[in-house]
Length: 245
Image (cartoon, rainbow, N blue to C red; front, side, top):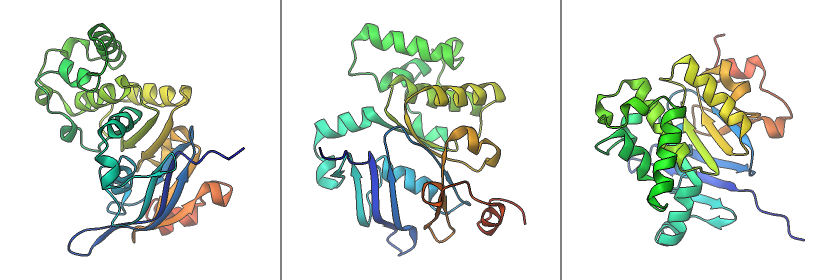
């Protein structure tokens, strides 16, 4: 029997801008279905770019990104059926919620990713996730009128309503109140979902995932707890600007 491929694989992935500046440099990373990975690194190290590559929003300048063993390329993304399935299975929440919100009302935002479902199921999911994230009283409100925390909760509702297999979360707790942070951490812990979470909040790392990956200031993977066999030590965290010296 052939072993199943890892769900997400990056092989020598580079992302470079037209001016030559790199956002990622030679990234090797494989993520199995069901793994909970936390990505650490200082501002500008490439955490957000890494999540965009895993969501097929940014394609590598060099190297290969594979999803279930299949290379994800421009040609892959031209396959509408594949892209539709991929977007339903893999969901990214951006660091800044404003970049995700564009519909006239909260209700329409949550239902936007549910257009493939019957109307009754769409409405049931909208209500379910609006209740869980305390948005029921805001369903007819324009998203631009919401507070930062409400926008963050709305983005979570939009993603979770789709019921993806893979959650890519960029600083997901940045604008959330403690009640919602606690709910999100418990929800993630209780679900068999693959997650990759970029965060600066070191205190939350043990609750966000079991595997820790650190990106350096020069956009490389310098630590992977799966290879190291344990959590990073304090000296490593200090070296890479994640704790005070």
